[in-house]
Structure formats: structure tokens, C-alpha cells
Image 1 (tube, helix red, strand yellow):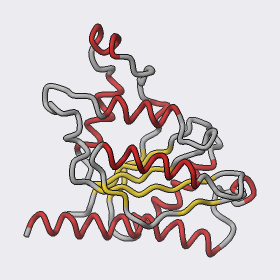
Image 2: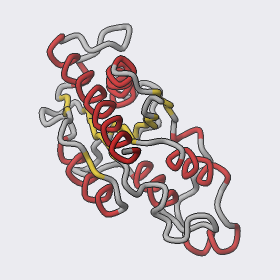
Image 3: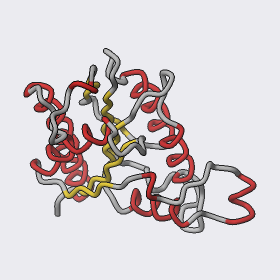
Image 4: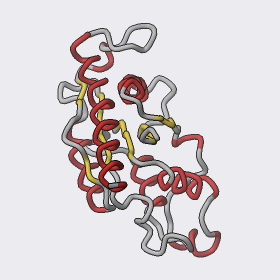
Length: 196
């Protein structure tokens, strides 16, 4: 059975550089034999997390659906835009909801436990969103994910894509595909170890 990867970007913009980058990494994962589901966070019902809202109204349908998607996948592929040196409020909010306890996940972290993640980023800046990756990795480790070392931070990304949303520079495109490939391989190895 192929490894199942859930892929999403922390941006809701239609022309998001990180969604374009994510698509390239997804190609790499699929080429390595993974089954990839891409979800757009903006399409989910994810109000800003508030404990009072949760107590009064329970889980929003979109938050529960996102948590269930994480639970039914083996790994996460995340494209993280950088806002003021950190990762986006949209991405933080989605992870906050997904890590809340439910009747079937008493700790809230069961959906993440023992799984892998890969983090990539794109930015018009020269660092390519690298600071957002660093901040995000801290949160991902906290909720139980192991982040693989392979990554890419694509700088000057506003000039990096052609009219078909493909990375123009062949080396950068190969590097982006390689992250998806590495996540697929590592996830397959992890699953094989669990079965042994």
C-alpha cells in the first residue's frame, strides 16, 4: 500500500507562491509512489480558535474534517509562507484546532503521533521563508510529528515561476521535487518498520 500524504499550504491567496511550490513537491512525492491529498485550508470552516467557542459549539465541521484527514494520512507536506518572521495565523489556527481533544482522541495529539512531516517555503525575500520553517518545526515537534531534514526555502519566489506555475530554474525544481520524494521514501520505510 502506498504511503498517504496530506499536503497543504498556510496561505489562502489564489496566486500563492507557496501553493505553487507545494504543487511541485507533490509531484515529487507522487513520482516516488505516494498517494497525495491536497487540501486548501481556506475551504474549511476554521474560525479562530477560542476555548469558549469550542465549549459552547463544539468542533466546527471543517476543523473535525481536517483532523480526520490528518488521522487517515501517514505524513504531512506543508508549505509555510512567512509573515513577520513566523508562520501564518491561518496555519497556526488549523494546527490548533487539529490538536484539540475529541471523544476519539483524548489527548488531541493522536492524529499526529508517530508521523512524519516535511516543511517547504517560498518568499519574495532572499531567505525564502526559512524563518517560518524554523518556527513551524518547533510547533510540529511539540504536537508529535518528526520533521524530516530535507527542505527547500525558495527565495525571490515572485520571479521563480513561469506562466504555468512551474519553477523556471531546473535545479530549484529538482530540489523541490526531492523533498516530496524524500518524504514518500521515509514514510514508506516507517510504515514498513511498523509492519515488521
